[in-house]
Length: 150
Image (cartoon, rainbow, N blue to C red; front, side):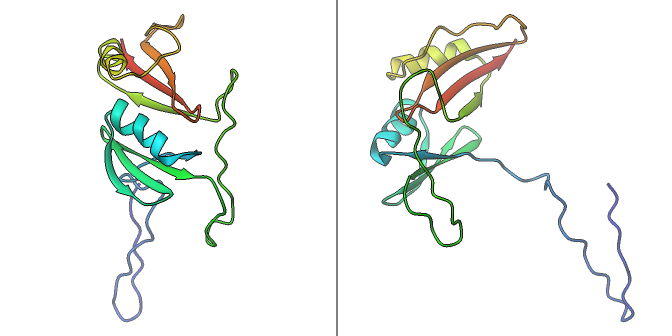
């Protein structure tokens, strides 16, 4: 996409407003959790995330090249006005999924199992092919998918 500039009468060239999506934009999920300490135990200790920020009810972690935000559900701050609600755990339902793309799914799953991560089944290639993937649940029942292309 070519940038368009308009010359003002005084000769100044204004810059165009930023485009969206910004090619440098990063998407980082925010997961509503019931117990921040318990979630940090999973995401840092078991999944190997790096803790970047931690407050009483919020944490931000780096996982590989991405980031995950964890926030205890509760009253919203005034600028958001929408309450985060941790999922009701159990059953065959998940409120969302975090997909983590890796180079070798089976090797990563084996390493995570050594750290105590319990997977719903073995790493497998789905019937449509092209990838190997395995699924686990975090303490709040957010689905975590580890995947690699074949």
